[in-house]
Image (cartoon, rainbow, N blue to C red; front, side, top):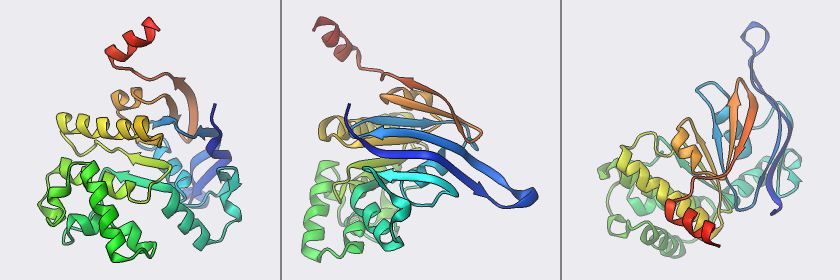
Length: 243
């Protein structure tokens, strides 16, 4: 098995104090390996989104350790954490988080602008990402004029702009109709399959979770069970049986 890209040890997250105290995560220890597809599954309030925010270095734990490629992140300075996050992770969110008044290309290249990449190189890489998602013809459109499926494709292009090794997808099909959602799922799992990107999906959608190689089932701030094995297309299953 490949080396862990993300590890946690006794990960705890607490909000508030006294009577208002809420234990969102209650001591989680697990690994996510390079090239895996992992679903973090649970109902609202189970702690799955909190866990994703800690894994993605968007928030800090109350106690415990998050390690990226064997390096504990809590030993790094805030600027180092921001740089590491920008270079290593891509994010796809249910709410899109696009600037409606900017063009599609400007939205896609924002991570490169933050990283200090020059305009010409930003635009070159941005167009390459949009072409990969079949959205190059929308590059000059304002983000506000796109359909939900197009917005999510732009989000995925933005997530890929820094060639991340880990892609986080938080309810990536939550705001999409069934057909559009399936297209977005195919794109995400295609990236995982064809480019070896580690895919971490946060969802309460059991059908989406079933497509991942491993599922971490959460309840009340704990991982209550783990499931392995992905749902392969029938053709792929038959091919494996024949080998």
